[in-house]
Image (cartoon, rainbow, N blue to C red; front, side, top):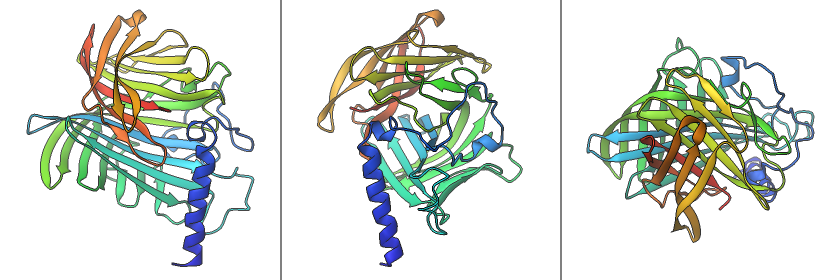
Length: 357
């Protein structure tokens, strides 16, 4: 093993350890030297489908609920994280093989009886991982989310692929609705102290393709939801994690909602109601209510896997239940994420993510 490779691996490990030691995933640490989200700044597409290296944290995050030709329900996750370990003005760590960026990929495939997880890491500057805005391509090793052709506009039509021990998937995603900006035209506040991110979604993907589970191929169709977010300090130092949902109702309407838990006091909440035509309505702190109904023993801890979600202004009073309560992401930064069913004033399917447990 070369000295350069050893140095790269040590930087990844010690850099990641530093991040983990400061707030959940480092999201509550300071943002000195990095760019900060500004309310009122307009998005610039397709440029904003690409990376923003002057911000400390960024992700491209896909979840999908699927029905197999075997009659079973499935869910998949595909995520690429970018994290900077030095502000753009600090060139002390920059070289031709290290540009101060760490890339990390997570992939999962979930059924009612199994949950497969894989993780990849890469240094910036060596083309092992990265994102290009146009034509769009995001990759880490052989995992990819990429436009179906050079003529594809933005992220409207993409291929999605990942693999790990015992599983793989190869899917096509076709958007049949617009991008949705969360919060105040994409400026999404996360705490009473004003921490914020830029945040938009493409929640209108139709999906087709194939899964492979322990050698068995399964044809699937369904829906997918892409979240795009970047910031430099999206949480405050007192916030410990979040509970997030993306819910797609049979009516064609959708709901994104989250609560960020604090060490003391009530959680901070935010929600976006998305009409069937893609028109968003933002709801600030206090409008959304999430109440844990059921907990399970998962990875040696108690995790709420059933919730009541209420947004009275839109007649939402639903219960969501995990397809597989054991959907634990045993990754460098562990968390729970998996598909859920919805019943109550509205019915449908969605995804639940919980961090900091």
